[in-house]
Structures are given as structure tokens and as C-alpha cells.
Image 1: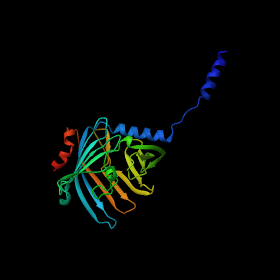
Image 2: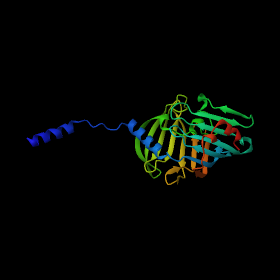
Image 3: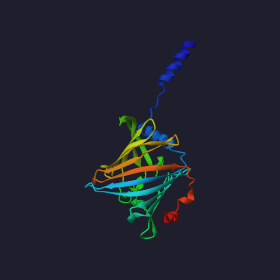
Image 4: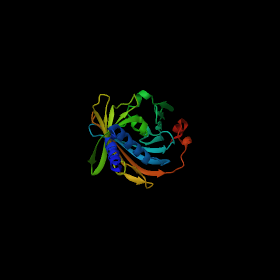
Length: 260
């Protein structure tokens, strides 16, 4: 009789349906793990050179200082201050990223001596003439997208997750983005952006990664190529410094006007 009951138990277990993880669930799980690995940096400062290239290959550059503050329970705060060339010196962008809802962004224009709020309808516009939109330069919180895993594949020698993410933000300039994320360190290697007509718009490639604080992987170079205009922007990051004691008082509209 004991063997009969054992047979019933085994048969019951075999008959129990096993629910496989859906592509949407797997995509969300990947994004959550990526976010988890990026938590805990507190704050950092860094320098950046923005190299703009037009369709004819003509180049111009801008030198920028950046400060970023991690905010518990919400998105990061950041400020970008332009130092050179002289025609943009003192221009500064302040970002308050939110997990849910529209991000807050303000741009200080020294020539006009005024702070301009970036409206929700304009966040798909070009940031200071670059191929990066205003929505690209805020922290990419998990809640900003819906997700769908597509496949695993090797990209430039690194086994990567390939997944789509769909902006929840209704005024986004993108219908979707395809992301390549390496499976070892969770570094974003490539993002393909599709416009509101779902046509290929831009491709971001990130390289020259370095590890900081024995945990965080940040790219040294971010190259955004616009396939529709032939223009491109290269961001080169240097001089990362963490745990500078930054606080909320360093990130407000008054700090924009004091930025030098």
C-alpha cells in the first residue's frame, strides 16, 4: 500500500503545471538586478568632454562638470555645469529624477540670467545641441519602463542579455529601446532607440568601463549615433570621485545660478 501512495504522490507532482518565467517577467527581473547592483554609491563628481560631430564630420567640444546624489526611495539628483567654450560657460542643467511620474529638469542660461524649466513635452528634445535628449540624461529608474527579454547572445566577447524596454512616460521620444547588458557585471553595452514611428533613430554604445569602490562599473566613453541625421556625440568621462559629502542643498535652483 505504501508503494501505491508513493505512486499517487509522484503522479500528482508530475501533473502539477510548472509555470515558466515569461519574457516580460524575465526582462523585469534583469532590470531589477541591474538597479540593485547600482545602489549605494551615495554621491559622485566627474568631469566630461562632449564631442559633437555633424554629418560633414566637423567637430566641436564642450567641457562639463557633473555632480550626482543618490536619493533613497526616489531617482537620483544631478547637476551638469558647462565650463568651456566661452559661449556656453556657466550654463547648467539640474535633474530631479523620479521613479514614478515626470522628472523635473531646469536649465540655467547665464546670458539671460534666468532658470528655464524643461517642460514634459520637450524632454525628447536635444540636450545642448547633442544627440542625447533631455530624457536620456536622467537616471534610468526601473519604474520608467516595461520590459521584455528577447534572447541571450554574445556581444563583443561578453555574454549578454538582450531585452526591450518600453517607456511608460507618455511624452517620450521613443516607442522602445533594445538593450544589451552583460551577464557578468551588468554593464550596459549598447542601446538601440526607436522613434515614435518605431523606426531606428539612434544607437548608444558604451565602452572603457572601470570599476569603482570594488562594486560599480561606469563607462569611460558613451557614443550616441543618430541614424536619421548623420550626427553623433561622444561623451568621455574622467576623474570620478565618490563620497564627497554632497546633500540636497547642493541640488536646487539657487545652486544653478551659483554654478561656476
